[in-house]
Image 1 (tube, one colour):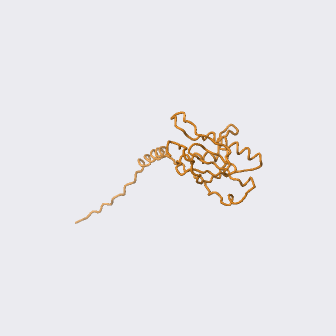
Image 2 (cartoon, rainbow, N blue to C red; image 1 turned 45 degrees about the vertical axis):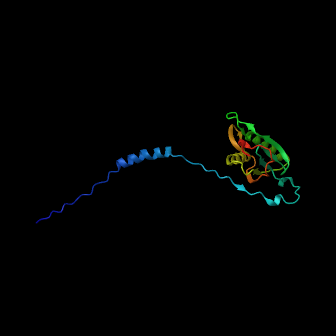
Image 3 (tube, helix red, strand yellow; image 1 turned 60 degrees about the vertical axis):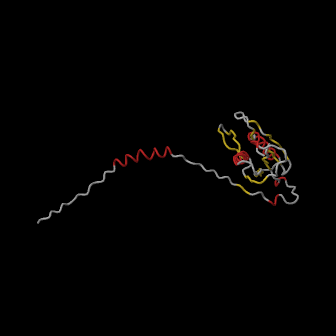
Length: 183
């Protein structure tokens, strides 16, 4: 018996259709992909050394933003109210909310006045109640860090107080209402 051995030829790989699929699929997937942007805010704890003992150096005095249930209070130096910003009514919902636009304007004026006195202050302490919602704290942090300014016909973020510290505010006085009607 004769056995014939057939030599099988190896088939050439045809990847043309696969390459066509990849040429179409990759751009479509990239266009539909949602790119997430994560922002990291650097926070620091308040310096205990700056609160101890009599401190007469105006450069070391603390600038505070206290988030009260019914207002925002700017203190400079720490504990001495400089400006109170009451809640405003939201035009769309009619609910009471914090007025961050006015806060930004007031902080811009504080920054300007401090610069006129030769003080280049970059730090601020945000004090909030325990039941203050997260979004309010984040909006306060964004507001105190920078503001939108027009420079050479383009809008840029101008620096206010980029070094943000967080702390607990003293408890509110009994009988005051809170945002959203919670006590």
